[in-house]
Amino acid sequence: MTSERLGSTVTADAAAGAPGAVTPGVADDGFEYICELDELVPNKIRRSAVGGREIGVVRTVAGVFAIGSSCPHQGGPMCDGAIKGTMEPSDRNEYVFAQEGEVVTCPWHGYEFELKTGASVGGAILGRIGVYQVDVRGTAVFCSSKRIRPQRRRAE
Amino acid sequence: MTTQLATPAPVFGSETTYPIVDCDIHPMAPSTADFYPYLSSAWRQHFDERGIRTYARARDRYNHPADTQRLDAYPEDGGPAGSDPAMTIARHLDPFGISVALLLPQQPYGVTSWGDVDAASAFISATNDFFVEKWVGYDERYSLAVTVSPHDPAAAAAEIRRHADTPGVIAVQLLLMDRMLGDTWYDPIYEAACEAGLPIAMHQSGAEGCFTYSQGPAVGVPRSYGERHVVLTQVGAANVADMVVGGAFERFPELKVVMVEWGFSWLPSLSNRLDLFWQRDPSAALRIKKLPSEYIQKHFTFTTQPLDEVETQADRKALFSASGLSDMLLFSSDYPHYDTDDPRFVLQNKIPEELRAALCYQNAVGVFGPEILRAVA
Image (cartoon, rainbow over all chains, first blue to last red; front, side):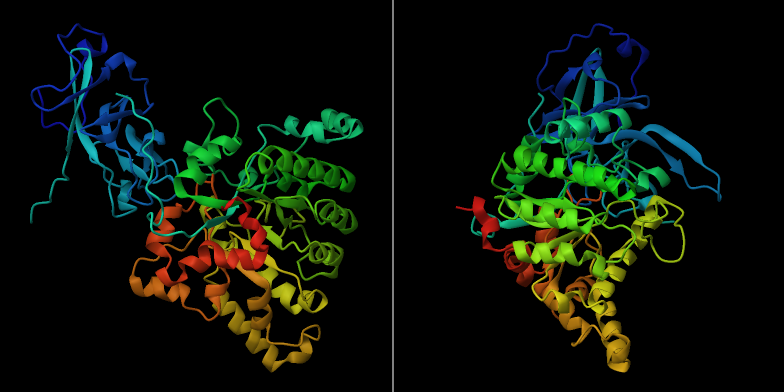
């Protein structure tokens, strides 16, 4: 059931509440049950305990994502953050808004992070937030406690 | 599966017993109507008819890119960030073991743009009474800087004397309008503060550069919130220089001034240049009799937030190495504002170990007196 996707795109079936034979708890593959998909209020980060650590699970227009609860800057509580898009680098006096639903901001200083990779948008700071694999199984949302490691760039 | 907030570990671990004095916390009343019980019926009617403008502030001119408040500081049942004393304890004082929280109310800041002198005095008095009862009376860790405005120095002095013996009042929050702090206009206020044994706390009101009679950053109008935030330190630096050269500390040798949120990394340069100016041309500053840096070291303290985010150990060492600085810095978080400094992050990672006791409480006790530790067993 797990895939290599970063975050999980909500399928039409799942969003419509298709019945799934899911038992809350820990699945054989180590993914833990979080909640039913329709319990996730759009753009509201749900605090969950997965593998003994606090993880925030959120459903946005871009999918369902799971993030670590601490900002790498000063430790701000990312589960209180806001879901947004971002202004992409552009020419002077030109504003390009993009990535709607793919960005979370720290509730303290407003640093932006990509929900898919945990990376700081635009490389504003060196650190990144934790991101975890989410899987929507039928109507249920599951999350892995294993942090997705950043992909290393291959040598050119 | 939903969990409660994880409880952070103590800032210094269990073996350390430093009390932490946080010299910049902003409480709010849920709404201006909450001040009404502390106004006379005539003033209630006045404000009911005309409204109360609590902002003449940066937000009128510069839109913040995100939010000026920490998103985790808004009460769940509504109201502005920082408007619930229990929540500030649960989210900030308890988790970090903060023993003293210096409260600097913001709602009076808007009066800096008011023309009505009497209305300004009446409103400010009501806010002081509100915060004494609802916050200082709520928990012994809460200590208040009572607010006064320079509209009418005699009225401000009377307000200071009214609270001189109020338990938990540890400072005077003086608002800044058109006159710089070295002006003798302020003398009645300084006199009352010295008489009451209260230091002056000077915090930016957000109104700087936002209306005709406000003091703004030097030269021109910044283009954005961020640019303004960076250059706002100029207002603080200019007023430090003006107080010294204007002779305020010759007239009031016991006067103490706490500069809150104005930065401090500019101070070594300012002190050095002031000394040089005075040595070369003492007749241009007839109101002072010593090196300007001596007045600064004796009379001023500076809060740490927002601490410059230097990246190397050498830069960090340089930030704190200026002569006399170790006796002049006070820890502050600026809770619940967006540019907050997290106590654990700053005290563990950024403040040199040899300065921690001084910045956590020793310097604060030196300025505010040992009675501020009333909540410490």
